[in-house]
Amino acid sequence: MLDCALISRDDTFRRQVTEWVGHAESNARLVLDIAAAADRLPREAVSQILESQARLVLIDLGDTTTGLRVVKALREEGPDLAILATGPSLPADTLLEMMRAGASEYLPRPLSDEEVDEAFQRLRKRVATPSQDADVQGRVYTVFSSKGGSGVTTLATNLATLVANRTHERTLLLDLNPGFGTAEISLGLTPRYSYLDVIKNFHRMDAELLDSYLEEHESGMAFLGAPPVEESEAPTAAAVQGLLRLCRRHFHNVVVDGGVIAPAKIKPGARRRASVDVYLQLPRALIV
Image 1 (cartoon, rainbow, N blue to C red):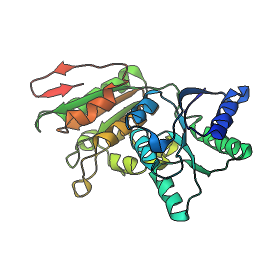
Image 2 (cartoon, rainbow, N blue to C red):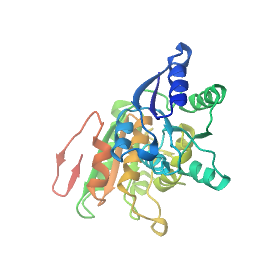
Image 3 (spheres, helix red, strand yellow):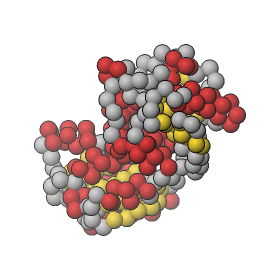
Image 4 (cartoon, helix red, strand yellow):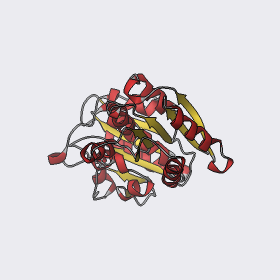
């Protein structure tokens, strides 16, 4: 079942969407319906859309492109969302900006029923199989400390290896220690990519592309490392939360080596819908 969110005040677009969702062969349903255009949508509505766990967002930008901010926010915090946007006809440079902001498709008004149906069919193929298990909403274990050298990386790598071996589930070790990531050394891996590559490509991320950024450890778990020092930059809280949402879509277990990264950047995204939260107080390290 494809869960959809509709954000529009345009009667024609609302009718087209509800009719398409209503067809038995669409195998889709509306889990959120907001009768407003994006240019008048409050910032908290982005959280409402994300919390609906919709995979496809159908959004009406209104009569201007000010609603572009909503598309950007959705893409940053929900990198694996498919976003179908509609609005006024746009010049080529603005249309390019729209696609870079994260719109999967953009349909200028007026819309024909055929255009909407064709766009739906294209996007269905993109979101139909997000991972090997379409219902994955993985657990997140975050290890961090207030100071370096407290054994966070050792604990995170051992925990990830143990979880992968004991559960035989898809497990990811994510090294979020920017500029100082050493988990790959512990694992004997030489990563080609880092979490920054994933964040920078949120706008085109799918399961196949995500897998191409990962390294596989002999234990069977996947690994996504931190960038080298010369490329290091601390990710924003929204980017970290978006990254964790993406990982939870594709892995049953996500172990995060947070190093000395601020817990506030990790905990909101990791815990909001995580099925398990574990707190373990250690002399210098904490696992969440």
